[in-house]
Amino acid sequence: MPSHSPPPAETRQALIKAVSMAVVLTLLMYGVRESSLSAYLDPENLQPWEEMVGMAGPWAKPLFIAVGTAIIAVGVPRTVVSLAGGMLFGIAMGLVTAMVATMLSAMLTFYIGRWAGRRYVRRRFGERLGEVRTVMKAHGVVAMILIRQLPVTALASNLLCSVSGVRAMHYFVGSFIGLLPGAIIFVVFGAGVRRNFGLRATAASLLLVALTFGTLWLLNRTTWLQPLREALRKNKAK
Image (cartoon, rainbow, N blue to C red; front, side, top):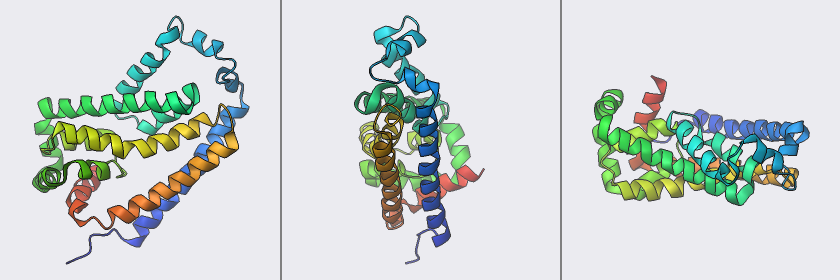
């Protein structure tokens, strides 16, 4: 049986990208931490944040979820929402709000694709769509967990899954499990602005590299997932 694993160069690139992202995010969060913005994120001085959202007050979190859902649905990386959630609300509530926004967006684009985007998705992914449907019907939740580890936009993967034949419950459960580790990492990055910057940035960086390495190891050994990886890779190149 031929090997479906990507070449070593691709694996190295993914690891280099993870390390580079960890460094860039650490520097970015440190910059915010040392700027005047940090006053708005101090747990003991949240009044300015409440003033920034006007009369929202207790509606700040629902407002954040609504905005996060909308921007992820149109293609903004979900990592942005996770970072912002950690910065504004801390680890626990930041994770809750980021995951709610992410899952609402995932379900929204899933049903939009299923109801109105079939022709577009079929045209976009072409002949490989049949192979993708076979994979999704056979592996359900597990396939969704692995798909969420692939380096593609949420919008592309959501639309592809919407016409893949996967059951909505499998899509939801698999997406939640698959998206949770990444959300935790980036929420911790964002929360480092509020307190314990060094500890949280270091922990998040190590988790990001470990998750990337573990994901590559698993994906490269899951041969039945390769048709789906190829479909998303070719779509990304268009």
